[in-house]
Length: 180
Image (cartoon, rainbow, N blue to C red):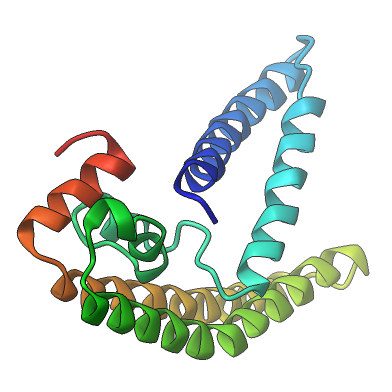
């Protein structure tokens, strides 16, 4: 995906998350006799959930390595998207391609597992079988799966950083985050 498209995804995610917080506030407000208008917040949350499922199913991280990327540890996919601006050498490009390929190979089955256990959690509530023990177990399973996916992406960012020079890291950060 092109750099600007990724930034739109990030911005959409940020706006959606902000909308979720606003929706939560309007729900509380509405529950106390005020016109909350939280329906649009729920629609935004649903759109974000659909996008999450799509992106994670493809083996991408959907912000799971945000802490790394934002702080000078670029991911291989984004480095490749910016390869011309970064002036990657043929060797750097080949190594970034290999890292990205390895990340996707490792991430896809773990991502599928994450989506599977997320669906299991939703079914507990949809089928009205949720109870304290089942919810605790399902949430623990979701968080274990999420942690495995996140770790794959964060470790790929660690390895990718080592491929770049300090100048390339600076250029990357400016391109993605608008400065140091």
